[in-house]
Image 1 (cartoon, one colour):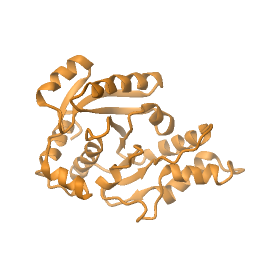
Image 2 (image 1 turned 90 degrees about the vertical axis):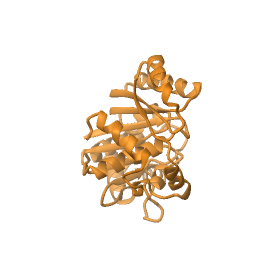
Image 3 (image 1 turned 45 degrees about the horizontal axis):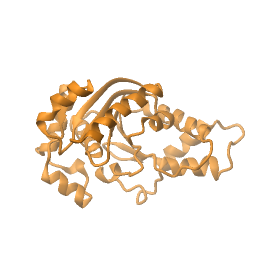
Length: 254
């Protein structure tokens, strides 16, 4: 099992990259795949053609609140991880022929949340063992990812735009990952749609991380996102899809 995490500032194309990675793996018959939307904006589901509400499913945050907060805390004889794991299977996991999906959501409460976070982390680590790839679309805050989802990652992909803030984000994200003791094998840079081709080498030298290439700008992909269509339905000749496929091929994932 490999865990791949996509991070970056809003609007750089990180959710698109996560969805296109899934499409590459699906087309290559590399499954099963679990996709986790850990970003409070929750864009990934729509890009995969998933409507949790319509499917009768809930975000993990909603399930944690109903299980540990509204449900009255612990239950005698049932471990917290076991309680939340069973609810994730039943109410939080969207299952399809080609992939499974869950959204972390953003319904958190004030005060100490140590026990629910620990339970969620344990449950997801147990669930993830059933998949070949776990793809996480994460917000910028890797400390939240470490606390709630996983502390072990294979590859982190930071999606860049052509701004100083984007480069500052890379430095901050790497620093946070080290501070919270997140264990990862590789930290990569990828250019977003609007990232100029000629800045890749410069970003690599200035930030001291390997630059893998960029997501090619593509009007068809833009229209799919605008219309709320699944990026999994893009034709295999799509430029953005092919650029992500090449990145994964260069990393020997294909």
